[in-house]
Image (cartoon, rainbow, N blue to C red; front, top):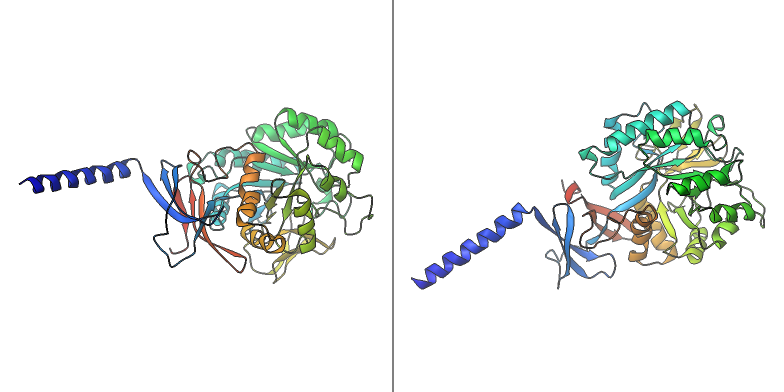
Length: 412
């Protein structure tokens, strides 16, 4: 019977197609594109994006689910009581994995563990451990490298922020090379103060190794900031913070950094570190192409409100509202909120588009560090994706995919 033969042929063809899809490990993701809110279907194969196709409507029309590239946070000091510089106990593989998985729940698929000012022994030990763990398949490539914030920063109270004075010191290239080797040459950024002795030569040497230089925790003059940019400094670390509470209205480090078009800026958008008018001004001056959103989340992130001790035994207070205070200097000490809170707040106060805010929280940092395999939704790139809702400027992560694998599902 001819129709039976045709049916059998079609059935076998369909079976081959299904098996081929399974063999190639293909999966599909649907959502509203973060760029223009159009429905799209993304095909994933072997951990990478194979195709992005516009469709008429989503299969599940009952939910307004957006899809975007995974978030990239370039300043993670720790999380859930775990610190990358030993606050809350010695750093271990299990603790690093705990931080990574906790960040996946917040949609952060790439991050730079950030080590702050500390004694040489601790920094060497932790860089070596992080470099080893970075290659573990369980991390799924979420840690491309590291950020060293300090110890080569201003020793002056206010500009120093919550960095312990006993650990702050002048730039020492030989010491830094020890850190660099311990990290297996994976320190991607160093944040320093341009006005301290030896900073300029240090910047030049970093750029020779293609290490990003950030200016932060400093009181650099116009001349010093300009020279730092001349020598290759690329970004201002958490602009508006790491700054004294009282500054001269004309001669201060803010204006030179804002006015120099060569310098990108990172900002903490959690609603505590910057006032809404500051965020608006920074955004209007730099625009979405020259800004990066960071959390600067501290080890107190994800913990209940209360008082805690920092690395040198000083008291930090996590308020019920979510601010981390350092009472001894009347300054903030990092953030308690992961990146999604800052994304929602920046979206609200600037009026920028969803595409622009994701650009600042994903694409821009990926490009700054030369990571061309992520930060956008394009064929050939890593399938690092997030599915989320955005209601009343609150970003709610529903699913996180890292290198093609679902690592977080809010329904499970």
